[in-house]
Length: 161
Image 1: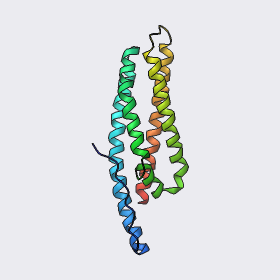
Image 2: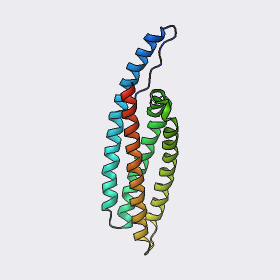
Image 3: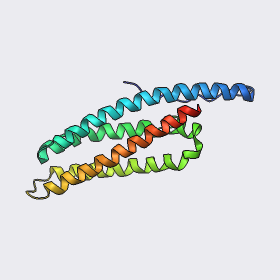
Image 4: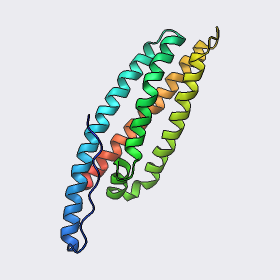
């Protein structure tokens, strides 16, 4: 499995031009690795999303959510870790700092949302299935838009690195 590469900081005492060249090379390499890891994670999450959509009852839905939840949390942790993807993006495209902060806030909302849906999927209620399915669909739509925003920011950073 690919992991997000740390972004190397230029050594002290290096001339400014050389430092920027080294920073750009390191940024590009880190972003390339991160882009591959992100695509791998997003592909895996998309496969789980298909399984969520195929779930025909609460136990099946709960089973997929129980698998997806730790994968999603690990994905978010990799993106947010110090010297991880979001740090690299902020360094390369500081003008998108607000978008990156919004993505981090969305991570917290997604974690809360999936936990809430999972809890309700585990209930043995006879009613509410249609609402639960609708909530899963809304969750997946938001997650897809979130992934697209991340992909777009990576591409913007790659263009600048």
